[in-house]
Image (cartoon, rainbow, N blue to C red; front, top):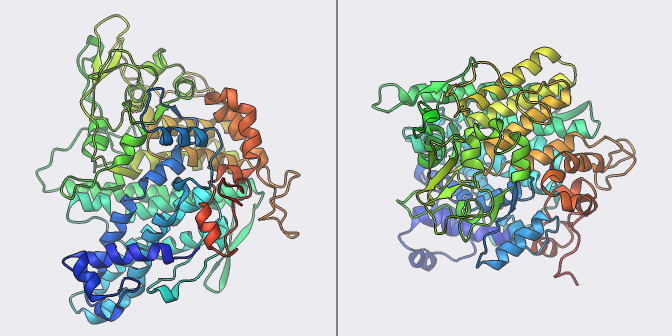
Length: 632
């Protein structure tokens, strides 16, 4: 990959915003293809300008994150409502049906590398500024260094989950003369590198900032711990699926051994640190300030004070107060938030991705799969499904306040500021009164329940390795039950369940959990219920498939295989993922998807064809998607 194509936006946005009053003035003073370094990097303000530019640039990439992380999953279908934007509709249909094409701009990763280059520039010049600016303290620099290291790692983490093998560099490109071609680096090598980077700076970032928006919209210690939990969960799964029960990673001059069991335990430990750090941040933010603090419930779990809904009188037709939905999604920057990208009216920066993908109107491209969601909730009209309030918000087909009284399909309404309406009839029908789409909804990267479920998944995986099996399974189920119970509203009797609700691999509430795989599926299905519409589901399914890849299963991964370390191509895990999840939503495409995916590479995105062409052979196309309509 060449950085040239992504370098100029770094100059024009990251530097111009802090050095010039207008684009014309800046271009008059300096040539377009270089940054005059001696006229920059003089004080802390220069660092902060590029630092803030990194977050702003990342906001411009969330459409890619959502498409990479959600679109091919079992959670969605194409919106049956006709749409004037036929190209989006056709492209999304092709991607969902397992026919992505490398000519699609959705797979252009250059914007993400622009964010990474911002981070690299701050990290490169920080020591230089520290020596020049006597008002810039060492502690401030160490905090900023940790913050930018975490943000860079997060962007690489998105890339390796979406594309598998990616170009990797920590080098800054300052002028066009410094452009070079960066080849693909193996996914697990990049993952090792970003884990080590985060390990080096953990605990060194800010615990919180002065404003709530900065505490939630910038990388804090809690965010870095959440990333580490997520990364270790992925590394354990990748190694387990390849049969790599022992491996080493170079730390300085030393080779340090690790195993999947070690990494699952670290995922648990860092989830605890993320939750405890968030709890400390919340306590500090709420102390001494005139803030309205919502009612909380932790269901006996430490550092998991979750926002509570108010369902009083809902069984009699009273309107429930959906505090969870309102505070987390409508208002944003809630006490449960760990890191979310900020959108606001002050700079007219809108979150167009949520209106592009989620909702019900003309112009929104995804409807929810009632088959997949019905399986999770034991039926969307049954007692189990109907009384979990996440079906009201995340999967509803009873919508009011729009043109026409009938609407085909189910829709994710998290970002539409819905008001729940419960009828007083015997069936207690639940509908949503839609006010309007929230064009300024923040995009949540990590929040409390996401981390709780990371921990639960790691606990289930440890139990499957017979590590404290009974205790880990029990604790896994406690985390899942806590999240379920805070969303449960019994419209018939008005009772909140006082005992744990158990869920089996068939995901019908009340059944028993009996095997290790049941507990993993328990978490997988709770993640679908809790995190639908947040760009998580496809990544969850890929991790599941990689974990079950079958080691050396008789077929060869041509990129990873060596005589010393034979690696299978992951076909076993891919097919298991299709069997266990995609088949529910895409039953008519069941055989087709298996054939199109072929192996683990089919679960990752094609590389944008222009990157392959411009790389002079340094980048090779994903072997499953090795054709483009632009190929000669």
